[in-house]
Length: 114
Length: 116
Image (cartoon, rainbow over all chains, first blue to last red):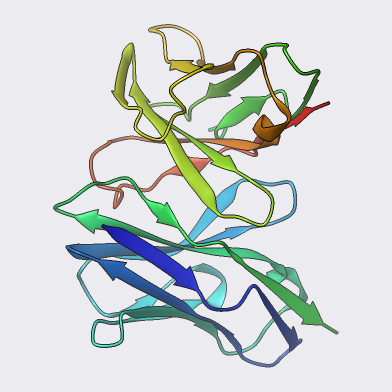
């Protein structure tokens, strides 16, 4: 079985300040982990993915995430928020060696203030 | 190279009517996935198809819902006798290869179904 918990439904930051979106997962197998971003009325776009290579994963638009097995976490960070980062972010887990069917978190809405 | 296309973008149906949602995968992609997103929730997997085959429909309700991906043309998600609880955003995704979600899925913009 697998599950994913996004710990914050909303995160509010000022432009130019760091972003932290938290994600914890559980998985019976080695997980593949992903972050997707969804802008209003648009489809989901892949930000980055972890598939058992380097634990620090760099993605697009300056985002990165670190896989911490001991903490079962895959938090998404960005050093400096931009207004265009305002969107919904989804953490996703699927299992290597198990069911490939992905499980989505409920999403975190990132609000960026000028 | 056009991305994943879905139509219509918005669909309004009355209770009891049928809804047909279409998805054209990216060029060169032969794997299609359908997801449903309810308000304030993440996406829930419904069905995974390859051309002319349903690979996994474990997330699809047993009644009223069906999906196909014919040899020619788009993938179709069909909902018969819609009810208010079917109101949601339905997303389609496609990939070049199937097994292992490590193969990136590309998402369409979604169809927002409203049942009156």
